[in-house]
Image (cartoon, rainbow, N blue to C red; front, side, top):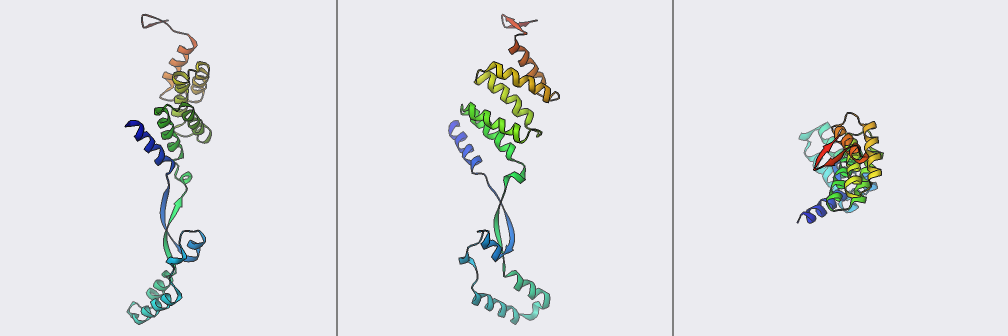
Length: 186
């Protein structure tokens, strides 16, 4: 059941799009493939609408002109780039967490690396960096790489909420602590 929810969430993330309503001329909408010619009014229909507006001169002057001018424009759904929304790093973060839950640790690591390269100064950068170290340490069993990541993490993000934990894990991997009966000895 949980695996199925993870699959659904991944599918939604991969198909994530955002649209917005935009008013533009019919010609521009057709050129951008946002409006099909079948939806376009024929010249005869346009002339009939203009004559009907002229009959109703109570609307008078500017109002009538605005309505006629508005007949040549349409409201369309325009695709908005997710890059401009500033959520791409969040999508990578969510997908990396889903990949980890599915046991796809290499793919999760690649997504975390994308966050670090594309959004290195973002709010999720320290989270991604720390999670990358944890991934190397616990799941990929690469202690040398984990130590390197934790050390670099401490240099880049000394004020992070994960700094104390990263320092502890780095020292543990380095062998600073020896455990006897489950209690660390210094």
